[in-house]
Length: 462
Ligand code: UD1
Ligand code: CA
Image 1 (cartoon, rainbow, N blue to C red):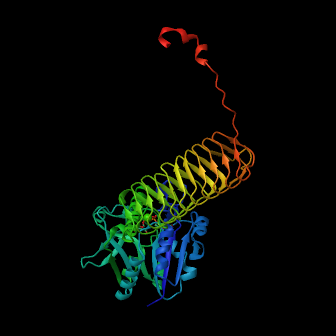
Image 2: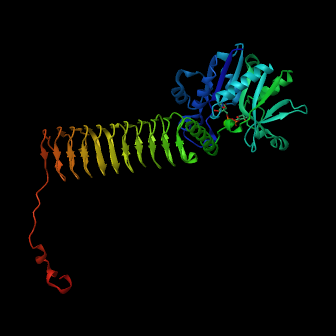
Image 3: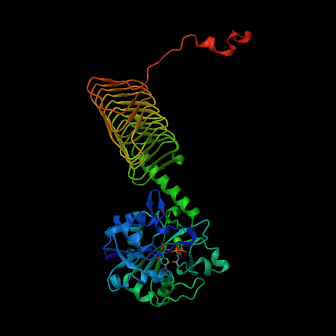
């Protein structure tokens, strides 16, 4: 096997995206397109990977780090010119070079592997990965001669009327003999509709030199989707999500309605978990086994352990320990940590707070900046008043304590184990062990209040 090198083209701006974000950085199922490409490339373990950067160079470099080498293309003069920027690192190496575009996020390592093997078996100077497209608009077309051999690739904007009819397209993935590639890149001209140096022009140059050019037509067109605009972005997203969902289902996750379930690529889910429709799970989230993720829930960057039930709730950067449950319609915000077998009911918001095992926070409650122990009962409508307009303050609530409904706990408050807050209290001071805080005015009943009303003697009020 010869040495294998890879060049990823990622210098373009992506004008057709009409975006402030550079094209290859647009995410598909939670991962930037160029990162998808590199992740698959890494699996084939090439001898060297070089990414061509230009627009958004710093951002691409920040994202990919030292997983690849880089070459800067300071002016975007076309894909051929882009590849030429790798000459310093690669130009005189013996081996074969795979060129991939950074805007084709759906290719799999398996396809790259098959292409490279095919190229070596064919002993070709270049091999084009092609696909059959029902609607080939926008792609370079593969022009074959009467014997069926590849002649050249012609771009959409340069194609004649009859060439536009061709449905075999250049997927943007090509393999070359490395030395022949760089030799010929110097000969590519920019006399075409876009005034660019096209990488595919190396193909016709090789043909003129009598070199062998092969084409490897892939079975699954959907892998080759090139994302140039938001329409294609949504198509890529859909294909990627279907792929992700199918993998989870094969791994034992029940997804009730896969067409309406949105799971990012880095999410992990244990078996026998059930995901109801219209659920979104984003970022680096892990979900355990035997969980129920109810309809309409949205979970990002969180750790959900086994046997957790989430009903129509939003969870962000939070942890839910085994056996806990939440919802409907509650919200865990960053740094909420929900202990084992905890019950968080409906219309609760929890932020930067730890809730100890078996504690119950059932209804209409805000817990912000607090540490709650175990086995606590928090009544309905409790507010942890954590903000004085300038600074956030923290409260601690001891184990086995009881917080009556409609209480305000004005932080900082230290509530000891086995203590109580009477319903309707506004608590400002610490509460010692076994005490009950009651902080509300006493009830007075105004006797015979009815008789004082002006209408009380009228016929109709009697
Ligand atoms: C390219 C191919 C086309 C193929 C299609 C597959 C050329 C001339 N055309 O067209 O045959 O069917 O991909 O998706 O190669 N880039 C640079 N520097 C540049 C220009 C582009 O790094 O100067 C990068 C872009 O960031 C992008 C990739 O190369 O990731 C492809 O460029 P793009 O402009 O999208 O090419 P297409 O028109 O899609
Ligand atoms: Ca493209």
